Image (tube, rainbow, N blue to C red):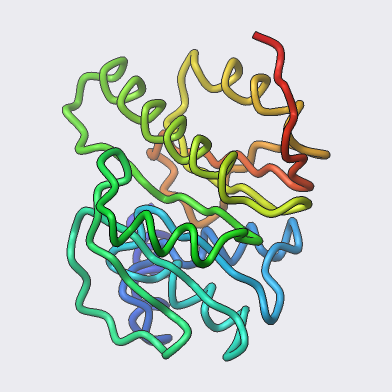
Amino acid sequence: MKKYRDHYFKRAKQENYPARSVYKLQEMDKNFHLLRPGQKVLDLGASPGSWTLYAAQKVGAKGRVLGVDLNPENTSFPPQVTFLQEDVFNRSPRFQKLLEQWAPFDHVISDMAPKTSGIKFKDQALSLELVEEAFALARIYLAEGGCFVVKIFEGPDVHGFTQSIRPWFAKVKTFKPKSSRSESKEIFIVGKGFKPGTRAEE
């Protein structure tokens, strides 16, 4: 299994991505036909920048990617990328202004993860908080027909959250990338065909 993990690590280095996580987004892009030239992407939990770089390559020079993370990045991004060191829960006036100026986004993608404690249920609860905040942003800033991709830790809350967002999208799927480590508890929820103004059942 170590050899399997090393494959993606080495491949990322060879292809000039800062982390192996790029291949998770790449798999989802191939499976769900997500990113296209000229689109706008909001990338949450962007550091160290692998998803941001991949998204920028796919949307091209006429597209735009807004990457956001609590942590700094030291990646060299192309001109269509703007990176902000920000907290999604406490958005600064600058962050809020950019969201409003760039909206609507064709994609809201989130690789956000909490600092894990090793306590399973606590980590799952923290993961759900991040997922819910990512969706709160998507509800406001995602374009009609847009896509929502979010990472969540496996647990009892996954089904409930997935069901809660179904009314907002034409299709909702869960996905476990082959490039995820086998011991990882992460899975991804993919919503396609966003329907703004939906009143989900309470």
